[in-house]
Length: 246
Ligand code: FPP
Image 1 (cartoon, rainbow, N blue to C red):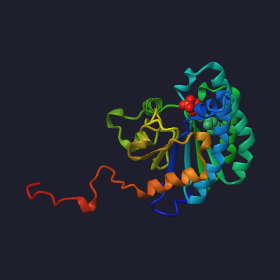
Image 2: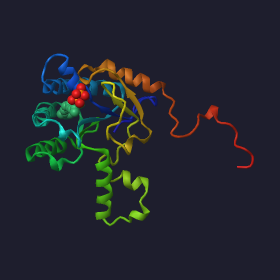
Image 3: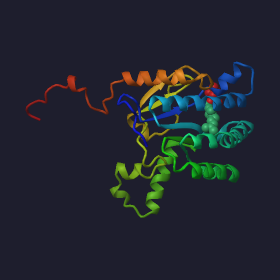
Image 4: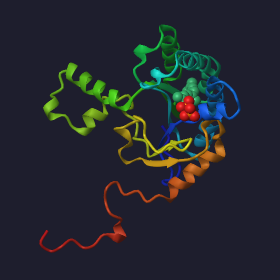
C-alpha cells in the first residue's frame, strides 16, 4: 500500500458519517433519502483522499447500536448497502480499491453477507487504496471478539500485549487512523475504532454528511496538518531538562 506522499498527511482516516437524518428533515424528505444522499458523498470524498495521497479510509456505515432504529430505517439502510455494492464495486475494482467490511457480519442477511464477501474477494488483490466499511461495527464488541478469538486459539491471555490484541482486531495489519472526522457537529466518538483511535486527531465539522465533499475533506486535511501530534510526550522544544536526581 503506498504511503502518504507527505508526512503531514494522515495515513488512515476514519469518518463518522453523521447528519443524514437532519439533512433529510430540513428538506421534508424521509430519513432514507438522507442516507441515499450520504452514499453519493462517499465517492468524491474517497477520490479527494486518494488525490491528496491518503490511501486508507474507514467509513462508519452502521453501528451495533443502529439496530435500535425504526425497523423500516434499518431495512432501508441494509437495502442501500446491497444496492451500493451492486452499483459501485466494479468501478472501485477498476480503480484499484480494495474493499473490506469490518464488524460482525454474521447479523447481516445471508444475501448481504454474500455480496460483501464477493466484493472483498474481487478486490482483495488491489493495492491503490483500501476502503473499510464498518457495518454492524462497535469498538467495544470488536475488542471483546478479539480477546475471545485469541483465547479460542490458545493464546496465553495473562501475557497478552498491545501488538497481539491489535493483530486480532478487524483492522489487523493496517496503521491506526491518524485522523477521525465526524460530520454534523456531535462531539463524541460513538464506539468507533476505540482501540485504534488512541492517538488519532479528531476533526469535527458542522457540515452534514450529505453536504460534505472534496473541499470539506481538504479542510480536514489542512486542519490535521496544523496539529501538533505528541503521542503523550511534550514538544521537544518545550521539554525542560530532567532534574539531576532522576
Ligand atoms: C448517521 O446519520 C448515518 C448513518 C447511521 C448511516 C450512514 C450510512 C451511509 C451514509 C450509507 C453508507 C453506505 C455504504 C454502502 C457505505 P443519522 O441518520 O444519525 O443523522 P441524524 O443524526 O441527522 O439523524
